[in-house]
Length: 208
Image (cartoon, rainbow, N blue to C red):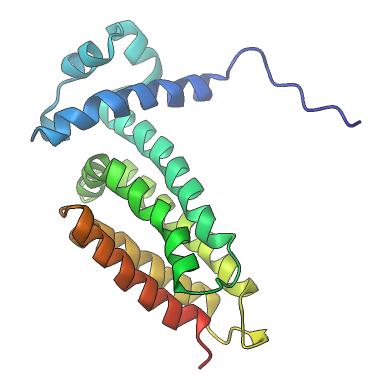
């Protein structure tokens, strides 16, 4: 029997940094839901909510922009895991199977929508946030591109341009989730999911 890789007994500094960021996600999200703007939250208030010392905070984050970057990196991992349900699906049997694969992506976005909005807003003036946002989109586009390359429609390779179609679909989803899905309730979010399913189904899986 092959032996399993030995996991280090101590997490790396970056692993500890992301683990701490997860605690902040849990505590900062309710503050944003109450109407606070991330730009108005002080470091003192956030570390008080999490229950750590200033020295611990500053040993991992230079400022609250660095904290937002770390929270964004952790959220990106959640979005990548949610998107994998779709990218690894192959050609869905029907719209219902596609909807089931896309649903985790919608729910993950909605769970993190307030922090993702803070990242998107900060990207307009902060180069670091802009890079984080661009990396988030690029990661999703790369995963979708690999999926499109593997899709066969009617027994033949999909004739679409995988890279450009993937970029358009990912940017459509990113903007749509931000503008249309984030502000609405469960029922309306479900209707938007149905609309996206129809668009993706007709774009990727229906023979031309």
